[in-house]
Image 1 (cartoon, rainbow, N blue to C red):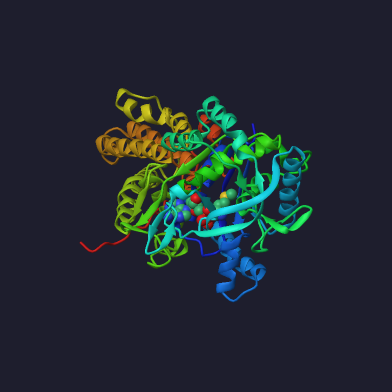
Image 2 (image 1 turned 90 degrees about the horizontal axis):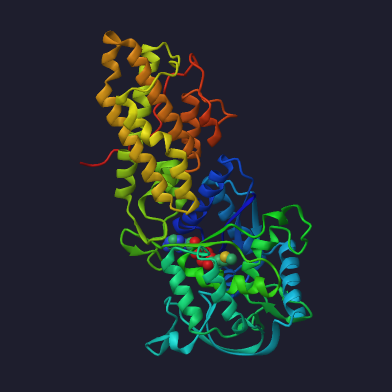
Length: 507
Ligand code: ME8
């Protein structure tokens, strides 16, 4: 079955930071895993370029919005490249195909009587591009703020409305019937109680600025930026052309988002789609929030972390590993350099890297660089194989539930097991006393390393590719199914090169 995985499309009001890199990385790992399983995948990321917030950022930069969005969107495209994201497309909401899709969706909603013209009067936060009810606001020094801390302004203008209130009952049934639609569970409860409290019709057009998709037949209005933005997910699948080659990927399997935008994805989006007669997505996973060394990341504190600088300093794969290993996916987490260094040195360099280096150096030195043949398993090998034999199934189970940290814990638990095994079996000492057993132990370790490198490819594609090279695994046979075929005895292995560079720390 084809799989469709998305990231949010990011606002181009500012440069990308570690929070954006995080969501995209999670999506990339799942996309890569599904491909390793042999599945067909469509993985989408991109940029959200309309709305008042972007228009204001362009004005502040003294630039025309088109020129400004071209420039900032490019930073996100470069980030995707440097993160080695395997996205199949990069959508920009200023593209013609997207305007066409938005207008087609609008027309379909209008045709079905889901849109009416009225007046909007209420509180709007430009920073969140969201409307808030008076009961949600707090007041400080005479100014009013949304629960997110964003300042709100009173807006009164003619507006088109979407009949969201009408979909309340349907949404609640939809959540009940699809208990996996919103994850994690805590977010699901939050969304459900919000919907139960009652939904009002949603203002879906603005007249006070022009940077957006014009409403069909009434170009004094531009579409509300969230209607525009959410539509990107079907634009890229070819909408409104349901005969398009990519339409078979819809509905999306997982929309990865941060917890800040779960409402838009879990309430508005399925309601828009259902109202237009389009199948809603299968799942929305809302992950938690990163703080930096204990502080909120913010423009004013100037502490936003540039992922490119971290890649430069630590290397891409240690960063990819750290982000998904450090914090249970769904929870909030704190980014501390010290923890990154500890995990890189301890788990990657000393744990996995050292195991590979010791095993492969012994094969080089004691077996003439040739892979020993498969050997029978003795009782002493049982502990090692317990975790190896179950590895693909247990990592797959965790990843299909987006539990990235659990998947990594499973693999690194087994790596610790294998390090214990090598210490206990002492293959270096067996050379003189029992060379056949030495060969068997090294072969078993090779089997373990090959399994680790194979299942870790989605997390650390470059480094695990090099590890599989060193293990003599042909580049065309690295999918999960390849683990069922054993490598021939005598396969020539190149001299090993350390996989990870340790970071020196002041004692
Ligand atoms: O909301 N920790 O775009 P955006 C974790 N354009 N994740 C973070 C983060 C942090 N501190 N900061 C940002 C938008 N993110 C809309 C989306 S989708 C149809 C439209 C991540 O540029 C997280 O995924 O504000 C969050 O949801 C997203 O960036 C917000 O990106």
